[in-house]
Image (cartoon, rainbow, N blue to C red):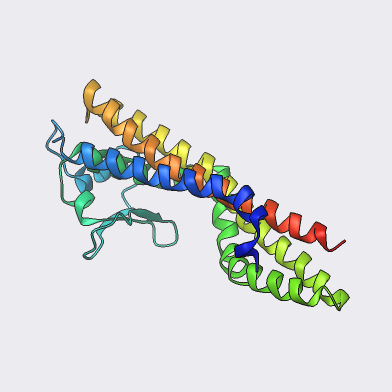
Length: 234
């Protein structure tokens, strides 16, 4: 099995270490900014609503996610709703302000027809289907490839499906960075943050973006490993 292949760890382990670093960075950065009270006194919900209304998006709602201690903040383009975790929705912290503004940034992207967001949204059903089948198909093909040409075909199909997941991660990067850029512009234009708060909010958003970079690196490294295994069967 690939778990015991030294090549796997050589190719993928650096990405795994990077992912742990990115997660630790975002956790510490968010925790620090969560202890900073925003001078405006606005909660994440109020910040998101101000940004949306300032850009004429009166039909986009802001909802509170039920319970949970982790961040699950997201913008749902199908329902046109921002869903914010309790620690973002309710609290007037700099972290909450930055995260809420970022999610509002996704709503602005959707309203303006941002190309990369449209591509990412189009890839979602493909990725949901492909990622669940990519590794099983590849591993079955790997087993069968020693005795049947069908195995090679299944390996190739697994690689193609996994490539869709990699493409999704790559496209996600500009979407996330652009949403953060829109968030920071809106926060400054509306006078929601001062200079010190803006720097702290940007640190939160940059740390969060790092997790997407790590996810992309992990996906690419796994794709490379699949290609290496496929090459061994030629």
